[in-house]
Image 1 (cartoon, rainbow, N blue to C red):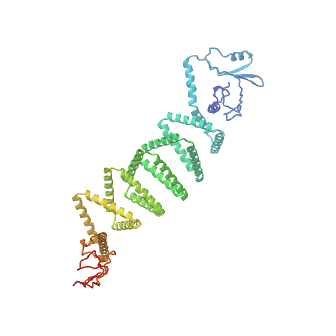
Image 2 (image 1 turned 120 degrees about the vertical axis):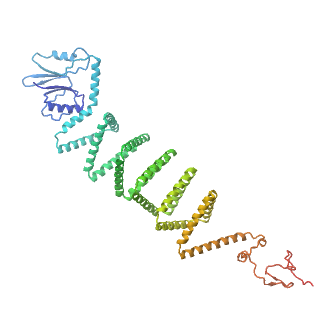
Image 3 (image 1 turned 90 degrees about the vertical axis):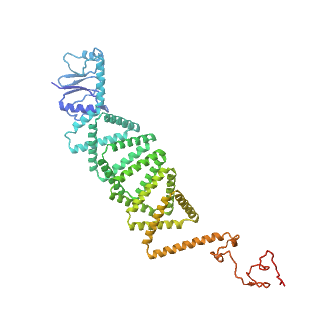
Length: 558
């Protein structure tokens, strides 16, 4: 007795593959197939066509001629609610003889209830939803028993077919395919449970790790290059709205992952990220490094220009919080290493920059500092100064005598360099501002604070006097004497600058003869009338009294 099966494939590829597996497993002799998978006017999807005969006709019936007899094969599809069979079936049966053999499939009993219609709709929807799972099961059955060469050949043929299809499809078809793929993927993601999701991610990570382990350095470079090209193409085509949406979704996913990871996983992730970053930094050339830094600076500038004042404050606050968290967790060795690397980088940058760039950097830094100082309140200023004083005190307490001497020496060198470069106007402005600040501080301090300041100043001065050598003491005294002499000369010059009625403000401590404007000479002129000694430019006088009347000829008075 021959074994027969009837099925409606609905032009589906995966259903055809499932039927092919079923025919081989159940040893089916005859199959009535409706709506097969047809391509180029030929039935596709059957792997072994040597042991079967395929008849593809557009009608619902056919006749097979054999050597001794003939047999009629008919398939009837009745998707209706009529109580009788279709007229085509009745006409076909009337044409048959009594000796003719007939084999008919798919004779369905009509169902007129609304429940049956709803069941058929649900079955059709369920078959559509299980399309991909059925295809996966059929593919898994075919995979069983294949050798590694067959596996490689199958994958190569599959990749070739996919590449050919991708090359022939238009941009519209590609967009439609990707959209449908995303819809199916989203549908699968929504239906999967947390256990299935974890299992899927674990298998995906395992497959990715295996592929990464097998690929060579050349293949890896080529893969990363193609990935970058695809990513750049997508970034160029996306609009500003799509870009904002992508960045928002990426930020949300990152935040969700960061919230779920433990402290150990976070440390491991950061360590692996640092290792990868160090590896990339070592392999990049100087040109690539300059280009990367320029692009990074450009992106940062673009982000800073777009952010509002509130977003900036929030970013700085989060940055300070994360920095404080890192500072609290780092050990003394890590802190020393960080400061040493930071100092090394700063020294390298300072050595490479020109005088113009340095001036520009300091000018911009001063502008930013001034803006911050203007915006801060009195409470924030007091808190900043207190924290700065605390940090300075902590640094001073930890530094050795050698480090302190080196710091003071470098500070004096930098101060001397600044003093040499400043003009007279800048110097006057600096001294005026310094004097103003000192006056403000002196006016604000109480009597107790003043006594404490003078006491600490005396202690520091005494310590300096004790530590200085005889040569340093002699040099200090000479400099002090020069400063005093300079101060005295400045006072004299200020007094002599106004010479009006100077004789009525005579100061015996002043040497008037040393002034360039004073040209008196010596009293070597003797008056012939009174024998009085006079200066050379002194006018004639009467009885030793100066007069405004100039007497050209002095006569002797009897």
